Image (tube, rainbow, N blue to C red):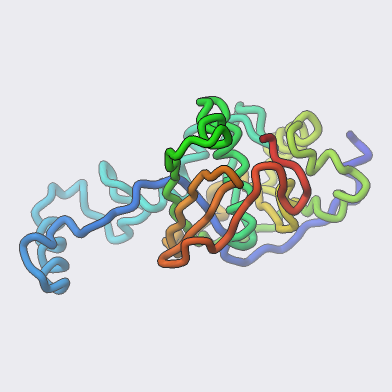
Amino acid sequence: MESFFAGLQLADTHQTLIRNIATIRVSQDLFDDLSEDPADWGVAQRYEMAAKPHNHISQTTAIDRPFEESEWFNAVEFPFRNWAASRYCDGSFGIWYGADIVETSVYETVYHWQVRLLRDAGFEQLVLGGARERITSERRIYGVRCDAALVDLRPRVADYPSLVEPDSYHFTQPIGARLKREGHPGLITKSARCDGDVYAVLNAEVLSDARIQSYLTYRLTAQGVRVSRGTDDAWLCVGHRQSARGRFPF
């Protein structure tokens, strides 16, 4: 492992990364039953905020407002507070994953949706067995600014294929643990699910400006996962047993 770290380069990163998370899509404004004019909804929202106690008010609501749903918490802070084992983490610290483009985030999250939720629950057997149930997941796509010098693992993938091993994290978790211990802000690596890039951030301070970009819907079918956005009912399809790198678990 020591030889792996020798000569690693840094990538000076200043770009918007994609964060793809599960959500419950909001179907209507809370005040749309009071008026048909959207301008009136805005007035009602401002009045509601003005009437709340002082500790609910912030000039940067998405980051600071306590006791309210926070876009910052959803897009950035959640994985730093809720530790879980992953490719570059053994579960003993927080880590945030983002992608270079939306398509990369889809391949990554479809895999984990299938493995961690549907397979464990036995739902994929219902679909692959011919059941007509429509199993879906609503997704929210954030753009999050990243400004950091990240350790670049992409040039090492050819020599160390364990970096993109589909089902095993035995090689990568010690890498993440060392970078965390030594205070590095994060790393860039190739996706194990497609040809895109994945960013693993260890320090939330290098992330900023979380903004919702779009919404997606995942639908499990006998052929795979159909991904739709807006009125496009088949924007992207991910097969059960294939990805750009070739393997899905079922």
